[in-house]
Length: 402
Image (cartoon, rainbow, N blue to C red; front, side, top):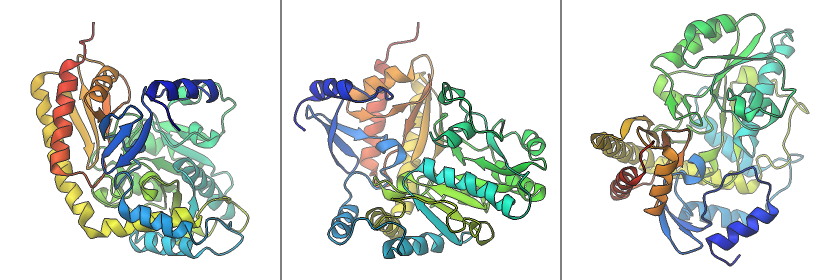
């Protein structure tokens, strides 16, 4: 497509549904942490397709894997065995010791949908269909399907879609007493994010996940971890729950798993995974050769010291962001690894985002005062420093709140 930012935006507004609030740029090319728009402007991309491009844009190993697979076979469906799918399942299970079974789909919402369905079916198969309630957290986000948007704890995403899916109960994030009370004899599972991404990059309180694991086990409910945003190295370990030392029953993954190519996965223990029996669930494109080939390349790249280097650069980035507090407009920095939030004060996050874009830095305003940063794990120290410099200038330039 030819044209500049303005003309492409105008064409889009004439043909697309208006469910997105796009920034006024059309991104046309990417390489590493950098992207270029249709006007030729260059940016440091610290949104990364919403925490997706874990190895940056057009990583050579991912391009090679995609090109080679595209010349072999694209799609055959799950009516047949797919070698790449088997290889990817083996690779994921090898680095996730508690998991014994994998199911593949195309997105985080689909992975969570499968996880929630399986949680209910597990209890049904064991003779306890009354155990069908999903316990989730206020302000959580698990996807946009009807089931996942019901389970998500943000009412704004449910508005207009009633009647919602029954059998869902919400508790405050981090409140163990409320969780214990919610896990009654009707509870099938507790679904939780190790870091709440869409509500502001809010890490679980210290000890919360471990206590949740103890509670669910004692109460006979499953622990379901949504690692769609935090998984595949985003926090400096392959899975964010490794930091807490917990073992779930089920876990969803997507986003970084494909490094930019659509793929999702549900990982399950043997005890629970066996209940996703023949015909009980499925996906036309799930586990297709293209997606699996790219995901295999992502996992292979993460074995080459990328995680270790990302922890070093991530610590440098965070330290630089924390120094911005001296300017009086940064209240705090939170998150882990390459999933961080800068909480601003006295200025609007949306205004800072706009000023950052004008200075060649893409960040994401989530809420009135939170900026989300999700750069690739391949970020260099120099790129981290440059991003901090540009964000500091943007924060200083943003107009003060009235």
